[in-house]
Image 1 (tube, rainbow, N blue to C red):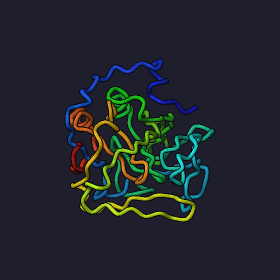
Image 2: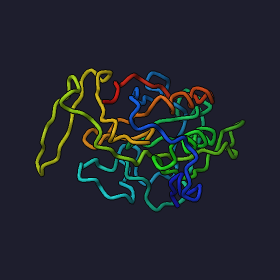
Image 3: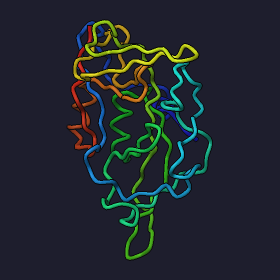
Image 4: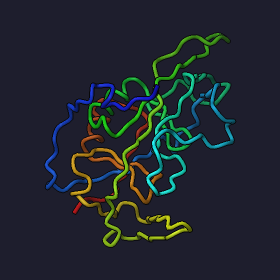
Length: 231
C-alpha cells in the first residue's frame, strides 16, 4: 500500500531545520521535457493510456485539482516494461514523468527525496521488467512518487504576471506568466523543501537545498528553473 516517506521512516525527519526568517531562492521542477520519450509501458495500468489516472486517497483541497497531489489508490503492484518497443530511449533515467503529475523514480532518487523532505511525498513500489534478447527479466527497483503537500504560499499581489481567475463553484486559479518572477510567503513555506501551490496545482516548487542534493547525488532527468524568491 502507498506510504509517505515519513511513515516509511517511522514518522521521523532527519532533514535540517531551516531558519524560517532566511529568504529563499525557489525553483520550478521540470522533468526531461526536452528529452526523447522513455521506452516504458505501464502494462497493468488501471485505465487505458489515453484516459486520465484516477484520483488517490487524499481528499481534494477545495481547489479542484483533478487528482493532482492526491497520492495513490488501492491497486495491485504496478508493472512497467522497459523496452525500445515502447519508446526510443532506454534504460530509464532516475526520474520519468507520468500522467497526473506522478513521477516514476529510481531507488536512488527516492532516497534523496525522503532524506530532504519526507512529508512532501507519497511513494508506491513498482515492478520493472527489462527486455533482454527478446525476453523480459526483472529490472531495477523503481517507485511511483507523488508530491502531496499543498501550500497557499504565493504572494499574488507581488508576483509579476499573476492573474487570478474564479471559476464556477468558487474555484480559484492563479495563472502565472514570467515564472522566474514569482514571490512566495516565507512564513507559509516554513521548513518545507517541496510543495505544490494550492491555486496553481500543476507545478512543483523546491528550495535550493533539494536542488543541491539532487545535483550532488547525480540524479538524472531532474531540471530546475529559477522561480523567484520569498518575502
